Image (cartoon, rainbow, N blue to C red; front, side):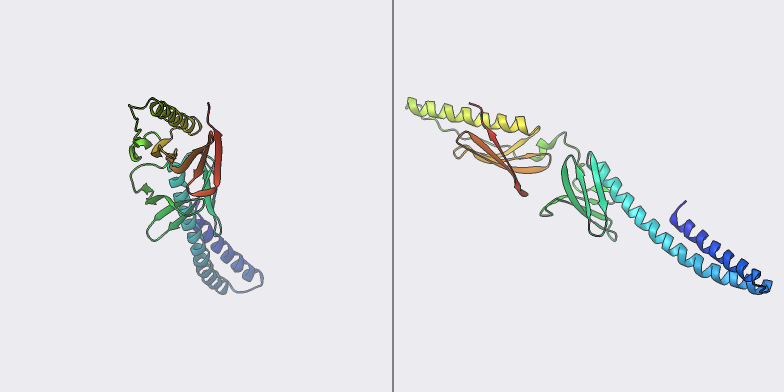
Length: 229
């Protein structure tokens, strides 16, 4: 039973109570019936409107929740209040905003500095579900390395091989710590670059056998890894 029906029934129930109360106070039957009809019309309409607004809010809330659960995996801590519109998916927190007039749901990263996804009538605008992580590499830019080797100088050749080995170790470390990571750039001279994983962009840099990885959208999300020898 929806809130609109409950509201109308509450209004009618109050009208019946008023009518019976008047009869018990020795009011004539006609007066009691008139009071019942007037009170019933007023309170049933008022309570019905309140119920309708509650139904509308519940419908919007269910629409938002369904869209988020459909497009994000392992959703927990869903909140859709005035001061808190957020949820957590796979350990990452997101905030959102919903425009009822255009039926547009916009999901932001926790910092609200970038848009993670936009949904209109429940449909993601790039036609790919946010939780669809099976083929993210098609959306990433492939990287190229330009290793220059001086074939006339044996020491230069040895150094180049060593650098290439370190570059591979950096890539292997990223792949081992970030499952499905896709390199989007790699400065082979400074041993730094960027990669994406689960729709999150990261910066990385290597120095003194340590790899520093930072979340582009969260300056506090910085992790250090030792590069194997």
